[in-house]
Length: 147
Image 1 (cartoon, rainbow, N blue to C red):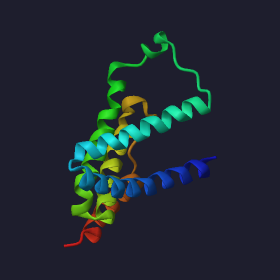
Image 2: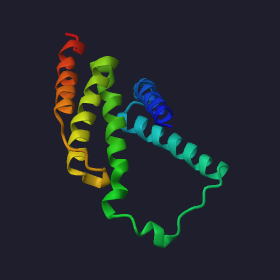
Image 3: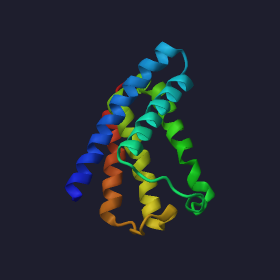
């Protein structure tokens, strides 16, 4: 099962690069990053709504909805920031360097969130191997950077 999840995450990573290229084109065609990002989210909304209908996923009750902490409802802001930023920066940075920067940001955040158990992540303390791996990845940014 872990292999399947790992494979799906790799596919999601491939999708990030493809999505960035698509959003860069939308940005050029529509004339603004926010319009490209909004289009991206609208298409995603309709795809998820269709999945809910096709899979007959029951909608939550109001009491269930109220159980989520207030901060949990704002995750979409990070998605909007991510999509908008990549639509602008992808053209300037190129795919490889952009992805290396994304992974670096994700890795540093994941190390902290795992170490402290923030936002419900299981606590996984920092270790020497995690620190060395992180330093190697961050060092690779220099190799990926094209002048």
